[in-house]
Amino acid sequence: MNITRRHLMILLPAAAVAWEHVLAGTPETSPNYQMSEHWWGMLVDIPKCIGCGNCVRACQTENDVPDGFFRTWVERYHVDDWHMTTPEVISPDGGKEGFPVAKEDEGKYFFVPKLCNHCADSPCTQVCPVGATFISPDGVVLVDQTYCLGCAYCVQACPYGCRYLHPKKHVADKCTLCYHRITKGLTTACCEACPTGARQLADLKNPNDPIHEFLRTHAVQVLKPQMATGAKVYYDGLDGSVR
Amino acid sequence: MSGLKDAAHLFRFAGLFVIAFLVFLLIRGHVVPKTFGEYGHYRGAAIAGVAAHPVQFAGHQACEACHTDIADTKTKGKHAHVNCEACHGALAVHSDDPASVTPAKPDTAVLCARCHTASAAKPKGFPQVDPADHSGGVPCQTCHNPHSPAIGADAGTGNAAGGAK
Image (tube, rainbow over all chains, first blue to last red; front, side, top):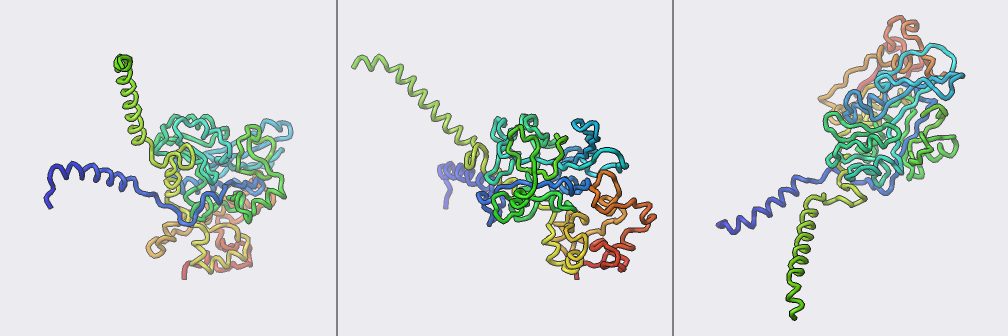
């Protein structure tokens, strides 16, 4: 077949369109995962946390979190009897390598693991000017890093300090609740690595998830309930001094 | 129809508006990603993009599929609820290709101390020791089997027993 100039002029744009389609590709999806059947959250059992930092290290390994930045971190509170509302809080390197040994002292100590609360009414997604961060249909707050401008409005909007600008990519980065894992039937990296079960992934739409029994039988709390963020990270045994 | 003839300049102007609108639609169709608005005010394909991130921690189910002996030892002991990769680290590379990737054994001196070093900050019921005082530098696995740490439970092998058969 002879290709004339006329044919070429018709073929070229068609080929360009086809090539663009190939380049865009279709990202790998999990065949049996239905977004409409899940509503994800997490349970943090404070009396079980020993401050080993396994979760922080696991998160950094799983998600390539740059040094000095944290998608999850652990804080150690020391509240003495005379300063109930002004606790001493430390988190050396996010608690990644554990905490200094505490000598027997007056007052109480406890560890508070923190991460994105995957709020149902999240302030961070509401301020994004371009629609680069959003709540997925299964209740996980995600960032579209190919769309993000890096304006950091969301970093300022998060009342829990759970977002940061990635120092290399210059876009917003945060906990994805290991979305790439939970959509494949695995638990999050932090839950997988937690030796005491202080963290448990919770599917609030799954009637067989033990979270429902736990919520019924325990006094749980979320962080900053007065902000009405609809936080879905539930804390058991949370002290009133935690901010 | 002299009235319409006089208004010809208005029609030309209206025509310009129509053309500008079409150009706007054309450009918009090109720059707005195809899946934008699929679920909300964002790119629907971004969800699959996030989900495509590679997995590093294989999950204890993957470990237990092969290492059944260790899994059995573990279920009987106090570390029953400690997942494999809590101590051994992320090993999806090993579970994907068990033959060519051999994981290193963790150093118990560092590993055990990370959780079990005594500190007033830890929950009171959690087993804690002062490592120097407790063993005087002898490696933990000399007395304890890390997979079932109570002495007498399944110890005395002098080593972390096991490996794939």
